[in-house]
Length: 134
Image 1 (spheres, rainbow, N blue to C red):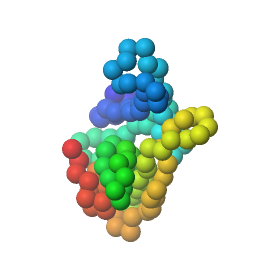
Image 2 (cartoon, rainbow, N blue to C red; image 1 turned 120 degrees about the vertical axis):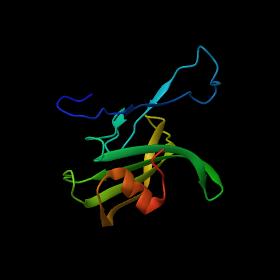
Image 3 (tube, one colour; image 1 turned 30 degrees about the vertical axis):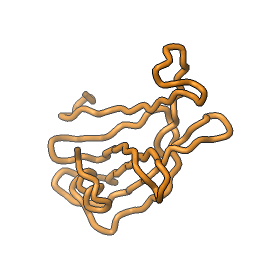
Image 4 (cartoon, rainbow, N blue to C red; image 1 turned 120 degrees about the horizontal axis):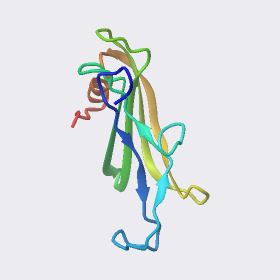
């Protein structure tokens, strides 16, 4: 729960087992994947109250063309004020292996600002890309 807020925040950390280890190996090390546009180790959403969501996060495994990918979807509102509409920023990223350190990153494949205005980020993600809340 954030101070002086009626909503709590979800904080996400993505970890992977390196190549050469199985997921169920108790001795396998875990790699933390840099996440989000600023490549920090965590990313969080930003609910304000029961109606306003300033930032929303979704993870999916799916296909891009015929290749299996892990997706990160982020929608955020700029200068959101309860009861008003504003444009949203949408980012779609895929988990990619790197040859350097860190060995994996989320790489943006699509980023745009919406033409339509939204009351909250959940509505923007659904309205622009058809991704439901839960």
